[in-house]
Image (cartoon, rainbow, N blue to C red; front, side, top):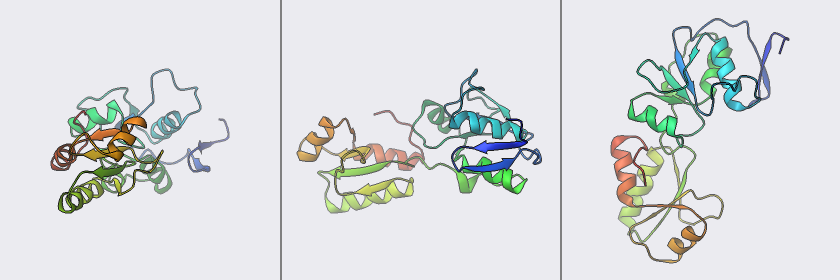
Length: 195
């Protein structure tokens, strides 16, 4: 676009491209952005463009030189690799606010927590275990519900492969995990163990 402004598709605001180069020494990965995507109209392309206008270099893979990854959730292979390599994953809002404030900001308030965007439900747990698991899910950025809500619950936490919720989760292709998986993720402070 030749207007001197950068269109942010997620917020519907225009951000001036005349801002300083706050990310000049940064190397950034954008989740979902691939080489050759420059002309596509998509959120990853929008964020990559903004990062470049702020002076960042774009990397198409994880390496020790990557400063941080930009992503909406922690669900991708790129984010898993980032977590395994102790590289922070931040929300796209970070790029927008760096642009608006024309200065480098701390990453921590924008970090995507491991269960960000996940809604979990449990079955077959006693009250004490359910309370502990609920607390761990919420500390990791997820939400917890007692009901297996259709098209909303992303994970069912089950100790045994039995019960109505278990059968419904199977029928709806909801991921079923053990309480041990949640506890391992909480201990490691990341969602990286396959299930």
